[in-house]
Length: 169
Image (cartoon, rainbow, N blue to C red):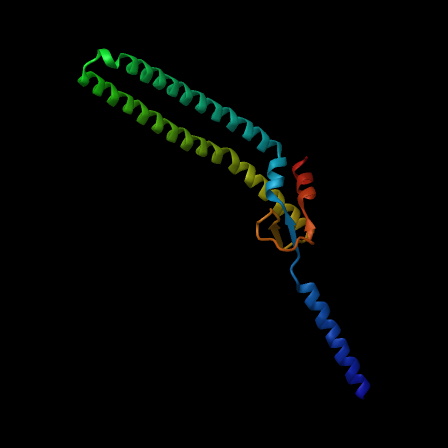
């Protein structure tokens, strides 16, 4: 009878341990930044943003050149102008500087808006692919494995290759 109890306890412990192992959540990881940078859509979005940034920079540089030319002209003519005229020109130059600063701020805001418009659908596509691969492989959690992202151990399954395959590249 004592042996039957021991076998029953051992069997109970075995079942409990097996149930505990099966009940644990499956965790995988993926470097989302690496995935996004590998996506063709991201490369074309970055190229479009670079072109936009170059356009803004060219416009602002043109305005700065115009301001420098006026400043040089006004400085060269200062001796032949009255004090009132020179003060008026100084105020005019300050207005140009203010306009250039405002144009830089507008350009930065428009750039950030465009960046959000371009990157949002790409991020959503990547997220959907990650979710699909994780569900197909039975993972309950997927952690971003980006350096400094708070991941301590990355011994689980890396989904990067599978998600790239899902996305078709």
